[in-house]
Picture 1 (cartoon, rainbow, N blue to C red):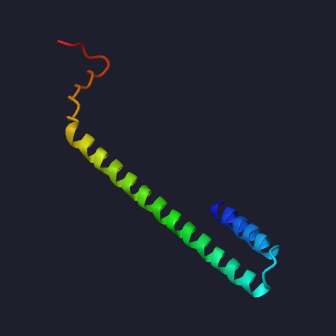
Picture 2 (cartoon, rainbow, N blue to C red):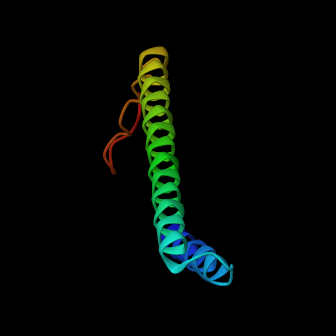
Picture 3 (spheres, helix red, strand yellow):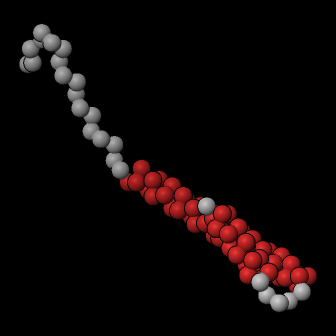
Length: 88
């Protein structure tokens, strides 16, 4: 979805630049620059998202390890006697 938004923004920027009175060479260069900036922004956002996901995963693993270390083993429950035998 982020790519489609980025492409829509690049298309809008290109069309906006095409409507100006500058020569078409300048418009094309500006469109390429806008596209490059948009791509860099998308890459940065993806990198930050990946970093945040890694940090959240590491924190969850640490919490799980802490919980496993802090939780005592449950007490053993004796099995019920087989049917037909009386308890003493």
